[in-house]
Every structure is written in C-alpha cells, then in structure tokens.
Length: 417
Image (cartoon, rainbow, N blue to C red):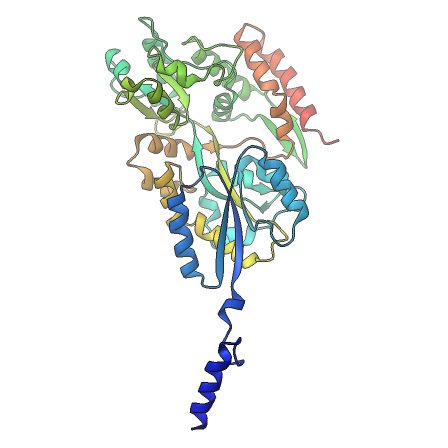
C-alpha cells in the first residue's frame, strides 16, 4: 500500500514539476539557433533534418533562421562581438570567410572533434584549409561548388571530337579545332582570376604565401608565370574581352547566343543559359577542368560553405551536435543530392554520380583549393591587382614585369596596420 501511495504522490507531483524522482523534460529542453544562408538548403531538406534531429535529440529544439548574403559579414561579426543569449549558436559562412571571424577569438575551436570523430583528413582541401586558423580547425566543411567546363556536345561532334580532353595540352588542341566557322572555341573573359588561380595552382604556384603571419604576393614566381601563360594561350582561342571579368557581360548570355563551344563556370550556370536559349537544353555537357596529366583533373578554386560555432554559445554541446549531423555522411549526401552540391568528402562523390554536371564538379573538387588563408585577403579582392595584371599581359605587356608589380600590391594589401 505504501508503494502505491508513493507512486500516486509522484504522479501528482510530476504535474507541478516532479517529486524529485522523475525528471522535468520540459525544463531540460534547450534551443539551438542556427543561421543558414538563403538558398543553401531547400525548405523540404530543412524540414526533414529538423524533424529527425529533434527526434534523435529529445532535449534539443532547432530554431533555423535564414539569412541573406547581402551584408552578412557585418551581421555575423556583430553577433560574434555581442554574444549572449538570443544570438546564433551555429552559423553558415563562406569557406574563405572563416579566418576573419576566427582571428578575433570569436569562434569555438573544433579541432578535437574534427580529428577524433569527423574524419578531418578526408575533407575536401578547398573547404578544410580555409576553415583553419593556425593549427586549429574552426570551420567545418558543409558543401562545395567549383568550376567545370560546360560545352556544346553538338559542336564537339561536328568538329569530329569524340571525347572531352583529358589534359591541358589536349584542351588547347581541341579548343583550337573548335575555333572555326564563326564559332569561338572558348569564351574566357580576360579577368576571370578564379580560373587563373586554378592554372597557377596546377603549376605548383601560389597567389600569396605566408610565413609566421607575414604574407607576400607570389604572382612573379616561375610557376605562377607558367599558369598565366597557359591562361593567355587558352583565352586567345576565343573573343572574350581582355579588360573585363566573366560577369561583364554575363557569360551565360554570351554562351546562349549559340556561337561558343565552351565556357568555364559552375554547372548551375547552364540553367541560365537554357532559360535564354531553350534549344540548347539537350546539347550541353560537362567535364572537369583538365590537368597537366591524364587521369587527374586540374586544380580549381573551390567555393562553398563551412559551419562555425560562436565561442560564447551557451548550448555548446547542442551546437556541436548540429554541426556533426549536418556535415556527417548521411545528411551531407542528402543535401548534395537535393541541391546539386559537391559533398564535403571525395569519398561521398558517388552520391551525385547520376548528375553529369555535379559529377564533373565533384571530380574537380578533389583538386580544389581556396584563396590564401589570411583574414586580409578581402583587402586584395577589394581593389584586385590580379585583374589588372591579367589585362596587361593579355594586351602584350611583359608578364614578368607586370607580375612583380601585382605581387607587390598584394603584399601591401596583406600587410597588417
């Protein structure tokens, strides 16, 4: 009887917060606020993820808030500076932005988690490397995107080309063959410096190098000059403007006019091409940017997003659980299939093998790189000397002289006040 009475007392008391024997589940629940960028993930994906995550983590609620890219840098920095309750606990940031936030001690060091449980050594280098500051890992790779070659299958067949080129030398030969009959073998704007960066990396060069926190521009190295020379030879096989980048005019519109055999772009640009010229819908193909040797794609700039955790989050364990889930194999491959992204590990590329453009992108991503890992790199892009350097070389100036001038300007931009 005493046992039955005790049980009744406990059941009644639990309605008021428990008798000390039963936990108060409502009081234990914590909310993890997650900032994700607009269009990074579909509402359907986020709904699936939230439902299952909360079911597997009954003490956690997710509050996913979608942010716009415009002005996001300042908004994230304010959130990190202000801290405290109500701020984000997990933030999606561009992969090249991590160091600027980590520099001010605003991010949680996730090195141990990434090394022990998340397979850091297997991540795509273009996402993993910019997520590090010093020897610590602050940004955890989420998804990637990079340039491929989008080409006209019908123009290739008409020119007797039966397969995409596998090496850079083959690429030049094929492009020259396509550059006839009023067609451009390739449309490559003169200031497409992201594409140039890939050619420089493929030669073993760098845009800039750092030593003990001191950075200097290296466009004048022999390897970087070889990369520029390849760019010059390829760009000459089309009519791309030498004094503008790929958005002036937008290369999708130029390609849609129907007289261009190839462009270098992310696969998603094909949608813009087809919207402007529906007749091209079944004529477009994709292949990775070729490398110096067959069997290995060339180096490319890898864009995409990392996930970071503010250092002052008050739900540290919950935030880490969210990052672990979103970047883990199950949800990472789901996101890649849903959004046509490259997963964060080369070993997961098979999940997007059914999509020709994404498969080409994933193959290239294995050789992906990012811009130099210094928080000052934004100052270089703000008044980009690489673009001016490219135009000077393409209009006949001495490459070595112009490379030295551009390298000095990069060094000055990377110097701390």
